Image (cartoon, rainbow, N blue to C red):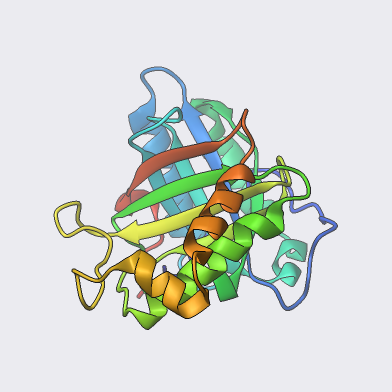
Amino acid sequence: MKKLLVLLLVPFFAFSQTNPNSEYWQTNKWTPKAGMNAEFEAGVAKKTDKFNGTAETSMATYQIITGQDQGKYMRVMGNRNAAAFDEDNTAELAYWGKHVMPYVQSNDGNKRWWRMKGLCQNWNNDAPPAKFVKMTTYTIKTGQMSDFLRFWRNNNKVQKELGYSGVSGLFMLVSGGESRQLLEVEPYNSHAEGMGDFTDPDVDYVNAYNEMHGWRTHRNDEKAATASIDEVWGITVQTAELNTEMSSKLK
């Protein structure tokens, strides 16, 4: 997705898990005051046009359409290195405070994510923002991240071997919430077309997995990955739709 960048309402405080060679994304979900959605949308659109018109500063806005956050607006800042969080954005924040905050009821706070490049599938930062994104959040038990990621990594290898056309990105939370959270993002442009297919739609996926990784590994890996998921927080799934007027319009 095209360097999806999101609004940062609070200053860019340094965070401990930065790596100068890593790629970071930031999200924040906003709730307008009752009856002020139109004013909020207009304010964000003007702010984005004024400050976020280049690939390096671009931002995207999605509105959550399913799940517990339905109705909220999600601002996304993506494909940044750690140095980007040192930049001075005083004027941008001041404009947001004056022209957008009067219509805001609340926001959920910034969350910063590290994109795990080796665990993504067909991800392309230069592609335009998708019309829809499916977001699946996994909360992993302490000490069991390796069990979950082993199954994920092996699945990725099988999907690539079988020519899977879908796109997915895996992100690990580094600041702004529970550090055991992983976020899978699956962008797509049509519910009718779906998210992707294998070269052979009739392939026996489990058999292919076992042929690649060893006898009964799919069963064992899946069992371990399932057991690694926190019983309380578990898995949450939400879908969001792009709001083009509130997002950057790159030329």
